[in-house]
Length: 258
Ligand SMILES: Nc1ncnc2c1ncn2[C@@H]1O[C@H](COP(=O)(O)OP(=O)(O)O)[C@@H](O)[C@H]1O
Ligand SMILES: [Mg+2]
Image (cartoon, rainbow, N blue to C red; front, side):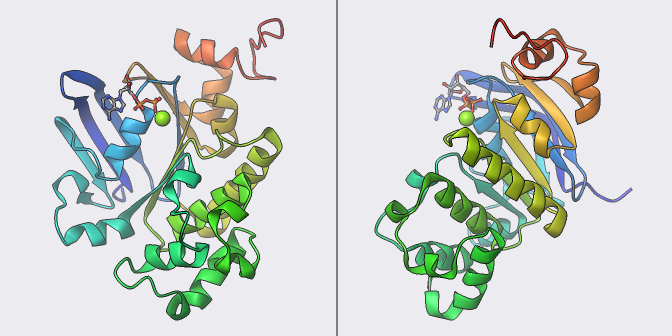
């Protein structure tokens, strides 16, 4: 069997004495999307930061495209950016307000020079891929809507064609209609670019729309990991059923509680 794009085993992550992730295992085959769902505080963002090498686990391994990200240091970090990219929840705080979108994308391609003119064709092509007009290049973050900024964040995450993309709550700050547009965009990009993705959300209904498989995180442990259809039809864990109860149209959805 081919080596998985993501291979995580026995992962333990702590902040000082606070132990957040406990024995998390995850493999993702190339071209697949695994959704990670869990309530606020369950350790999703901690997991995301560990997957991109920004946090070091106290135990376990994280290999992306065969590379142990926990061991990557110094100049090899540049290479790591081509392995794995994080698309954050809030693009407004991750985009520099004084820099144009073109500059932000040029910086993603080449952090040292960040030369827009040199990379203009590539930048415009990626803007088009996420359905933003070419003149977005010269716009500033505050001139864009929340949905447009999230499209920029997606383009920035993909522009280096990383082997794996980690999306952490990328629709959570958006209105429902804009959320649907971004999920459509993600679904299309998955088909067209055969992206390998870990798609994180507290919302099981959102995860369902873009994931081949779903992993359920509860207080830092994996309580269930199954194919998306299987999870919705035959949830094994009590906590998964609780999450399902909040999803309109799912078996057991409680209209009274919604
Ligand atoms: N930088 C940090 N320092 C200390 N504790 C943190 C830090 N980041 C998150 N935590 C704690 O770790 C736990 C998991 O947080 P997080 O991974 O952000 O969960 P989620 O993304 O699922 O909401 C929470 O108890 C949170 O308070
Ligand atoms: Mg989070």
